[in-house]
Image (cartoon, rainbow, N blue to C red; front, side, top):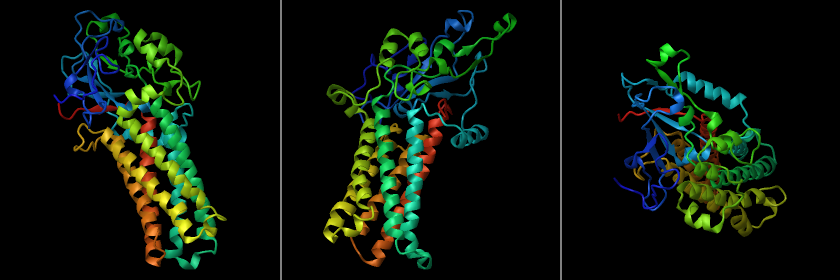
Length: 411
């Protein structure tokens, strides 16, 4: 087994828990110098609250999967393996079914969990990407359909939408950082072991029980589930029912910025935090270009000032987007060289990486005032904006599916 250097068997969440056994061979991550990003747990004993006889067998067809990205997003993944005919436990159907997918897509339009910071991150980036797509149309239209162009289309239409889009991206990046530094430090699996199994309603059925696994939102220790506040602690009843160690970790106050000690000992070893920090840094630098795109500023800059205050920040900001997208992809991978095509977070990182490339290529062409170069700059913004929009839409979908069920194809 390749073990991460930062792995500690007694550290949350990488340790054994009541009724759960950590599979140390399944603790993985793309880089050994950074914290692990994935772990798996088997259920080694049925909970007493299930109302079963002590001889009841643990479920052999299900396991819990912990991912660092899922943990930040308040998601809890259940892994379903081929069923054991002798097992008493029925696993829920996988969330990759068409019905479940369509239901979640519908919720993207009609469900607004305003208490969930992960939903806000995805929602804001989605609207920011839409604004950038509109900006790209303003920039590209003079090249594709000159007859429909109005005199101030690029200066006012493009400039104002660039400023709004850059500002929205900055707000989303700040929330992304808040999400990262307020990750859950306790052992929350969403499908809480204490209430994981529902006993049949009759004593007769209890002797040959076929029990169903279900999400236990009332036991969730993530702050995402608390509908009473946007920036605060998990649900009080969930913390109260947790173990003393988990309750202490989960009940900590909302953090606006981590301490130097936490940065040095934890966050700078967390690939997800590094990715979020790169996104914030890139968005902050990119915002300079959004500000200098405004009418009255952009059209009064000298060529040298335009290169330094408008085009160059786009290069640096775009590089930050590339780095963050690449790191978000790596975070979901078991090895740095193995793509995780079956994980939503990997595709989100991929599309953000493509969008970052587009936003970086745009100013590289923009330094040249030739007609063909300006056309390529506008084209790069166009497909880069659409890539960001696709990634943001998938992220919005991800934020609304809190209890995914995966099929273990390797079994």
